[in-house]
Image 1 (tube, rainbow, N blue to C red):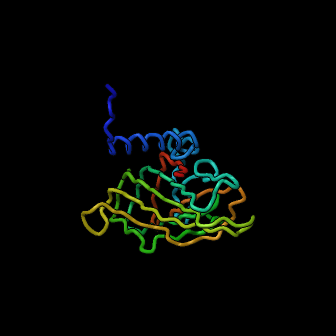
Image 2: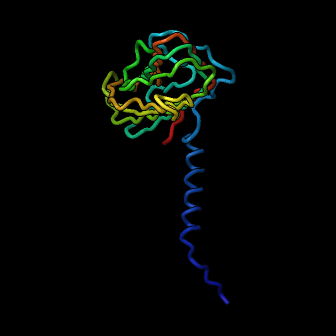
Length: 202
């Protein structure tokens, strides 16, 4: 007697998701493009805008890698210490340095740091979407938004979360480039990135 297989839509959905995930891994998507550092990076102590890490080393984008709809995700974390109340501004830039990178929108409202603190952990996530890819030169469009989380209270007892980004940037995707995160703290202190990496999500 021939057995009739019962249709299970949930099982089919799971099997399809597994196949798609395997295909993503095979294509190099949803994976880290470069290994993160295996030791703490150099602490940033300047009160002017400074890159948190070398984009060329840890968050690069190769020439002609992007296409319209491409998504990159930058993730980083570490610790920070400072001696007094100040303000913190985070600026994502498309490019390899603070000076040459095109801004994608600094945090509009600076985060107020409440007095002295030591070795507070932080986590940063930033998504960048390529909206269009044009001819070589500054003829392509990207936009991105990110968040910075830390356990330091911000004007109260709640942990602080600061959003940044949201500004479209006109860039050159035909050259080797990257995503730089600029850090501006108005008071003396240190921020030590402990890891940073970039992923291609599609």
